Picture 1 (tube, one colour):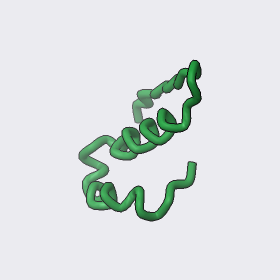
Picture 2 (cartoon, one colour):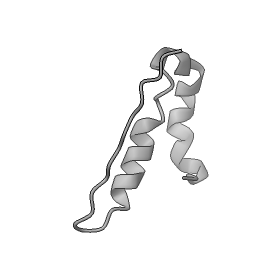
Picture 3 (spheres, one colour):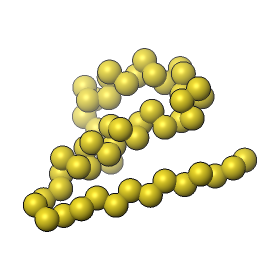
Picture 4 (cartoon, helix red, strand yellow):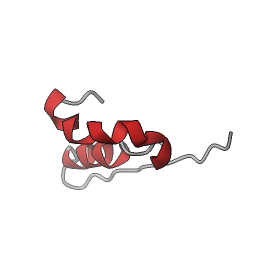
Amino acid sequence: MREQAGEAEPYMELLPHAHKLGYYAWKPLVISKALSQLQTGEILLFMDANIQK
């Protein structure tokens, strides 16, 4: 999903700290965008994976 340039700007300050956030700082933005595009009666299924290195 490609975002408009202005939508991601408030989150850019989090990028230097992404390693501390577990690289999931983008999730609320993506989920919010997907929820806003749902039609009446549709549901959003979100699955997250915990991959150990």
